[in-house]
Length: 464
Image (cartoon, rainbow, N blue to C red; front, side, top):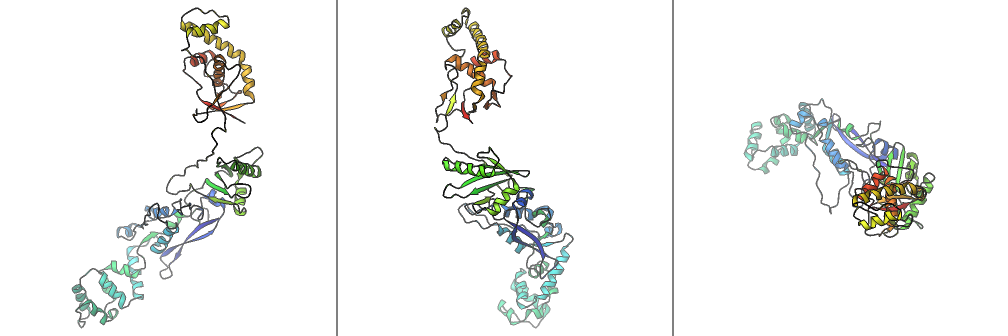
């Protein structure tokens, strides 16, 4: 893998000033994930945009108060660098554009440097390249009119005759004017004496490199999320895994398309690299994934969620399935308090229970009956659900569910089934015979179900 290495090196002409050098170097996946080293060639998307926004982060760090020098900032020598903005359909320059802007436009200096030091060095540099053209350019950039320029030159040499700007080239101005003659326009001296007039503290480097003994660029203590892409071949389609680092362990979760070949590919990878019993999702030690990234030509790594200007969001892994291929179940029609008295009386009569009283009395008798039958048939439900696992999912109109049958599937059986599932629904998701929710007593549950205060109006998927 590649990373950016950064260093500040003395400017050849002015050793007191340093310039930023950025270059690509080799690194390891461990350095990227554990130490936050930026993976320089792994964050560009299909549209050519660097999703990490590392360039923006570089400019942000350049303008942080920690690297601005107060005296120079007040005098206009710590100016921000501005990058051109681009539309969505415009070609994006590489992220290294900002590196070039910093390298070519900023001098890095010690915090102890003063404006007087800058001015002194500018004078020294100006003296080394003092010639007619430099003096002419300085005169014209100082802001005065032609008469001001003529008056200034004649104050130094009265023999000079000037009637237009063209006459300036009839003389060697470097012999008439010296650096000290421009001392009233210090800004012009600095402008022409130095190749760049924008300064920052050398502490900038500490803000953009990782603190573990190298000069590798990075802005995070670690990078947890990344993506592995396995190329296809004769037997399989290309496959993406969303990867998440915890400690030294990486969890790999495949993105499964409706095409069954993706599942076959994911299963073959899990069988090869995962532990026994891991079918699609599996875990690997970071060293094993590092080895694969370095040696497997069919494997590429990307960091599509890495962004230094925003908080990193975990990837959203997607698995598609074909509607109609996964059978959904539901609890069929159940008893409730809105049922006519005649229906309630018939049920009570079938179990030789007196059918006298108003409706509420009849409902109370039915709830007592449901409680007795629940305990009587609990073992039958335990046996049914012992080796069959169901999870609840939202009801769907795309895939019509079928009734889950335990017993004869009549309203009484469905009501007892609903009571059992509510009592054994772990985390409101998994029907588990070994788990029991004691929030409701059985009779209270029967009453709540009859009064529609609780329900199981969801679908269930049977899982392995």
